[in-house]
Image 1 (tube, rainbow, N blue to C red):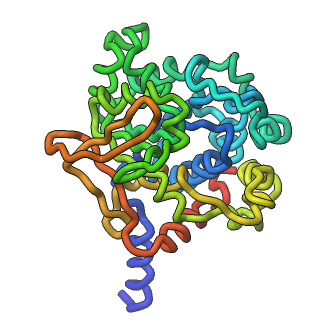
Image 2: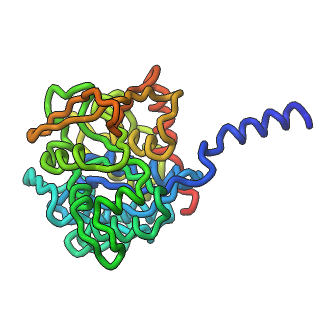
Image 3: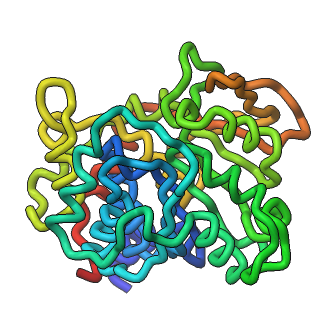
Amino acid sequence: MTLQRTAFLLLVLAALPLQAEPVKIIFDTDMANDCDDAGALAVLNALADRGEAEILAVVTNRKDASNASAAAVDAINTWYGRPDVPIGTDKDGAKVDRGRPSSYAGALRDEFPHDARPDDAMPDAVEVYRKTLAAQPDGSVVLCSVGALSNLEDLLRSPADSSSPLPGRELVERKVRRMYLMGGGFPRTARPETNLLLDPAAVVTVVNEWPTPIVWQGYEVGAAILTGRELLPTPKANPVRRAYELRPYFDSFALQLSKPSHDLATVLLAVRGVDPKLWNEVSGGRVVSDSDGHTEWRSNRVAKHSYVVIRGNPDTLEGLLGELLAAPPARH
């Protein structure tokens, strides 16, 4: 074998996913206020294109005046060649109404191909959760949550149904391997973080009752990673580009300025795990939360929580996420 061919094969091997099988993942997102939810779904589809993830379902966790969060999800998945990914919406969870609809969800509904119904006519998020989990092997599913925790509380409280004889907590314990959660700030928050403030009561339930390991990514992680401008050269037919084009940011828009990448980073964590080249993981403790949405890390050797800290310069993660964000669809 020639030296050149050996070098080529090494490069190919280095680009292969770390796991032998794609990660089975359910994505729980507040596809309404911030465009990093659209960016995170783009990163998830890009990782699926590389054989690293299998998108089992997407559920939305925030009611929006546009009634179009499911349509935005479906428009993005359709762009990436996955129009049939199941989608569910939360009907009675985080009812945060700031008096205006999403800056981009309605446009994605109106301007891009999809076949989703209005949010209030879509399957319920917990129904999609239960049906999806019940169909998977035990201990095989990863959850990625990047918004309100309302769906997660409802799932824990859900009774047995036709999809599974197990009540919610037992279903989660049997089917879910690990959850990656964007929320809070560590080692403690100075003020409540947005995702947890959406439904503080649900946060208390999840931090105290969730039966599987939780890897937390605090606000400070995404704040250090700016992405968005990478979408400028992508086609205008790309709904993710459109979401960033419409999302106001300071005196311009996210497409021109880039913005923090909270949700994108959580998706990468959920699929690739805590890569020691990119992250330090703090374990041996648990997250506690109060009714106002504050979080704090406390030592507890038997707890199943951990949180991540960026290892080294955040530019490495920024470049990696920017590349995935702008990657063209493999199945389009």
